[in-house]
Structures are given as C-alpha cells and as structure tokens.
Image (cartoon, rainbow, N blue to C red; front, side, top):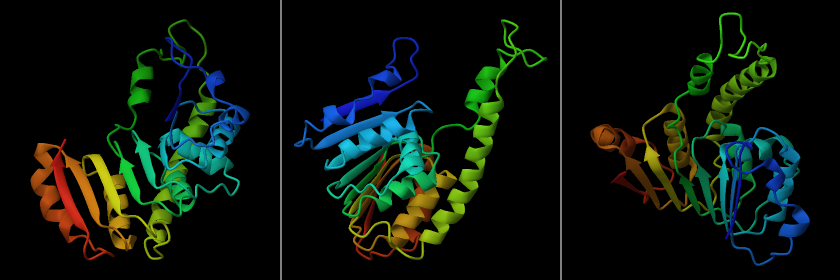
Length: 243
C-alpha cells in the first residue's frame, strides 16, 4: 500500500514538495494499492506524473482535486489493472470522475465515501468574518481574490457542463462494462448522489450489488424511491445499511 496525501503547507500538514517523483515510484513494480489524496490547487503536472507511475495498481483511491488534475492533464493514461476505485470525500467534478472511469476499463468495484455531504459556500462564509467593508482583511491588506473568483466561475461552469455530460452518457453505457459492486458509504440524497446512482443503475449491465449507507431519518424515503429506479442488470441487489 502506498498512501500519499498532499495538503496546503500549514499547521504541520504535508507540503506539495512531498509529492513523490515518478522515478522513485517506478521502483515499486509490485505495488498493488495506492491512495492519492490531493488537496492543493496547483502542481497538476506533478500529480499526473504520480498517477502515471502507479498506473499498474489494482486498487486506487483518489480525492476530488486528484480527479480535476487528472482531467486537466490526462494524456491518454489508462489504468488497465485497477479493479477497485474509491472516491474519497466530497465530489465536485462529474467530468473528472467520468474521465477517470473511462481510464479504468476493467473496474469491478466502485466506492464513494462521501459523495455529496459538503455544504456549498462554507469557505466563503468562513472568510467573510476576516474581511472589512472595503474588501480588506483584518491587517488592512487589500484582498487578492480575483483569481479565486475566476476559479469559482470556472468551477460553476464546469458543474453545469458536468450535469449535461453525465446525462448524455446515460444512454451509451460505456463507463461500467465490468462493474459488479458499488458502495455509497454515506448517502444523503443530494442531486449529484442521485444522478450517479441513477446513471450506474441504468447503464451497468454486470452490476450485482449496490450498498447504500443512510442516516436513520432518510431510511423510509430511500427504501421507497431507489428500488424503483431503472436497472440495466435485473439481478442487481440494493442493500441499505445504517451509517
């Protein structure tokens, strides 16, 4: 198992400089499982170099920003050996996940840890307390947020494109040719969760089981609504488990 977490370099967290280089990782040809949790909005080339170096693994865990980096700099990279894929924490990019799913043609197991549990706008709310009416922070420095605003606008546009793209893919069934099991470890019934659940059920012909972790308050709604979604695999079993 190789686990790499890349965070902003504050409060003792890992710096981006700790990303392993491809020539180091290439010395582990027998590597079976890799966890790549990337939480820094830069060094896209570095994260893709890392992904190329571990393309032979059988089990892969990635974060939302890892997916965005993969989508931005993907050069026809394919993970032929990956059988199990885990998406860690909240997902904000449908297109990034679609890009990776297209690169794992032999995928059999897909796990979402927290697909849609983050509350949008939390970071903006937290930052507002440190700003004054003139747009300066507490130290009187002028806020430099133009890049962030541009990035937010791009992300918003991406989300709109993501929705339509995901819906278009529903009809061709190309993402899950060998997918047998799916697990939503924490399912709250958000739009992105429901979109992916419907997409998987409608297109995964080899699907055998879907496990849905739910909170007690949502149990009745899930058990009534979800079993009625169209399925490409008549024998697929849907299991509900309290989380």
